[in-house]
Length: 611
View 1 (tube, rainbow, N blue to C red):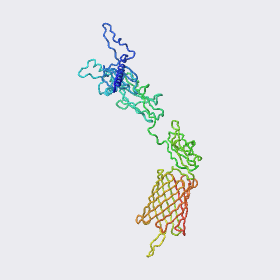
View 2 (view 1 turned 90 degrees about the horizontal axis):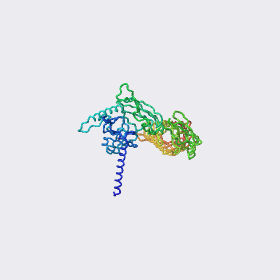
View 3 (view 1 turned 90 degrees about the vertical axis):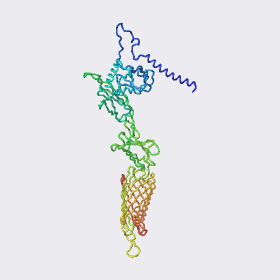
View 4 (view 1 turned 60 degrees about the horizontal axis):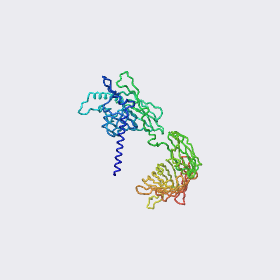
């Protein structure tokens, strides 16, 4: 460090010391109280023969007590013999008439003079207020040490100091009887309740909290309830405050009995915590800590039919009113508005007209008016609306229905006597996610079919009609990759006249399930004892919608049931009609046979319900 830098540093320290000395010297030249008599007037000679009288002190304290002598903004200058032992950083309390008024921190000291900085939020103090360390005040309040200064070790207190000590102890005891301790809360949760507690002396009676929401307006009154050991409590319920209100103010008033009063003395109403002009402020967290999950419950459709009105249903929280739907054809343009109608408590419904439900899609979002009268989006936004793909000629169905139960019957006559059977299938499907479908079902097959049987002689086996009884069930999953591709797998189990068997089924689909698609599946069941094939079935299908309520499909099935002499082949046409919004009816008819010489017929029907 060079010499210029050293000089600058020393000059800076000297300037700070000089400024502090000037501040203390200036305060010494200023009278301690406004309107005080000049110093020379206090030392005028008394008349000859008259005894000298000491100056009156309205609040006698120990000689080492520290008092405020000057106020400079948020900084306070105090003087007293006890201050000579204080250091920077000491936390002190200011008190008047035995009541703690403010808190501060010692910043500078020179001899018996200190400069104290008031803490944030502390009320202003007046000249003459007593200052003492916080630990000493707390110890005196809780009886840990005497109120007056202890005499120096090895010395006996004089008669005058004993009198001062007794007087200070009496005043401290009277002040403690009316003192009030209170710790203000830091924050009030939005919509919650505020818990207040004070500890008061026996002279404090019937405290009342006067509070208001905001910084203006009249104060409300809430009496405090007595607990035990001088504790009083109150619970304030401001409710759900407006968003722009972020503070609650309060102060506490009580009836205070005079010190040493007789039974006929009248008590006085005093403010014991805070002040009406400077009430205690508690911040209100105006925003909920968590966003409500139940604002809107709405399941949007992913696809819809071309030029078909699109109904929308949503469950909206009670805080909102007058919900509307903003919609437009996908691709651009301005949004149009459709008002929602209430169909039940919290349930609203609206319909997008068919002229806007066109290929390739329609976009929409929901908005509602909150408790402050502001209309805001509650489901999607104008910048990110919900897009619904629109297709031509698909059967009416929505993704809101996650379950489907079906019942189907199929019969076949292969064209020869003793070669006919029937089958009944029952199934349940559940859409767990957009990509996962679970399903279970049961199957029953009965009838007759040609099978090879051993003859009574050593001749070759002969073909004869044998009963067919095959009962079982299945369970599996279907995985969907978007709207155009899916794969499925099932575990099959069956019982028959000669035992039981296990098997599997795999399948796939290419195309839109609600539109045109191609499907294929393979199923196989084998006996658990000898491994003989109980069922082999290959199924191919092509389906396409015709109009908005009709679907046609062509199906080819190649199967072998219980090791028939020859495998059968079926060609059939299926037609599915949506007779109601959730009810679908299917009919099927076609040809079936084992060879071209003796063709047979096949047919069946079914019903499905979505919910």
